Image (tube, rainbow, N blue to C red; front, side):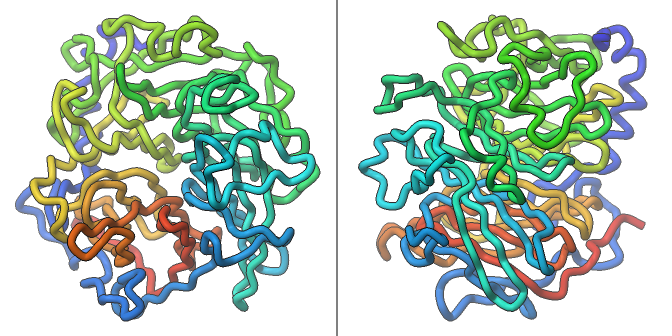
Amino acid sequence: MPLSRREFTRHSAGVALAGAVGALATAPGALADAGEELDREPGYGPLVPDPDGILSLPAGFSYRILTRTGVTRLESGEFTPGKHDGTATFEGPRGSTLLVVNHELRGDRSRIAHPVPLAEGLVYDPAAPGGCTVVESHRGGEVAQWVGVSGTAQNCAGGTTPWGTWLTCEETEDRAGQNGMTKDHGYVFEVDPYDRRANRAPEPVKALGRFAHEAVVVDPQRAHLYLTEDASGPNGLLYRWVPPHGFEHGRGRLRTLADDAGVLQAAKCFDSGGRFVDDLSRATKIGTVYGVDWAEIPDRDARTVSVRKQFTDGEITRGRKLEGMWWGDGGVYVVSSYAREESPAQHDGQIWFYNPRRRTLTLKVLLGVNPDRSQDGAFDGPDNITVSPYGGLIIAEDGEGVQHLFGATDSGRTYPIARNELNVGTEEDPDYSEFAGVVFSPDGRTLYASIQTPGIMFAVTGPWKRQPDRH
């Protein structure tokens, strides 16, 4: 049942108040609501430079390198593939942690130094260089790696499922015959970290559409799936997939769906006055609340026209670089990494929260345009995110210049957790790769993340603690 503009307008005052209470900060140490004092400063103190020039962390924290492209090897003998990206963790055997890791590799496979190996029975398209690896990490330091799926393209983010699998998303719209591909791409694939046989003969979940997928989350109560699209010209969309009547989720169940099963929809937002909102960048104040309706996608497989181009600008709400998502606090956290001239207003990052019960989208984080991205301080370009077991969010930075992992507390402050010190540029023109795949171990003791280039996965441990809330 759609949320009517009249209904939203009638209740908007109360919704706006509720949405503003948990508003997060826009800069290190900033308060979402001025004048409030907190019990203590958030975070873990200043970052200590790493003598090895890789990863700076707060005092008392340490890191261990689990995998490194071109250095560590899979069980089959090939090197770890490149371009680490979205990652999920699962409880593994004998106290280990299983991680499923995306590799955002695209284009001509022959030009990729370390593609995902074409493991027998696990290949979708032999021309494509991307896919996922599964990493088994033991507390004693032992690490094993193997292929989860291969022959996919530009596996960027994705999402975990309540039934213990990983949904990996292709951020591309390449068709067979484009960029050397032999099959159509731009789909979601399911990877089972526990059962290698379940990953054989991979097929896309076409019911979830074909577009430049970024991330996906599952609503465990309603069984809906939410998906983001990282695209421009025009900007991408926020999607919802509603399963067909009687469908029950579970291991391998998505693969049984017909290509047109359920309903794929795009978000259409309106403000408290009932006015249509064409682009999420128009929100310039933390606590902004939009009502959300959902418009059905005419052709989800984009046979002739890209999905986001099947609507006129007055029919749906767009957003630039819709990136990471995470389910938590009874709803969906959604990242818009930045907006520039292609959007109505510019920013260096938004994080929204969709409440499926109220059918509202609330702006929780707004990062103003960073005037000097080469300087350490303000954060910009949020990408992958996770909800922290210690409160608030942990965010991977994919901006320009200095790159961080940083936290945002429920009480409205941000703080650094790690800084990438590995310069892949030159001394005169330094370049620091983005962070990706930020996620905690199932027991909350270890934070995993990767530097995408040259492709290094870390396990970070230390004196984690609950972050302060308001008085």
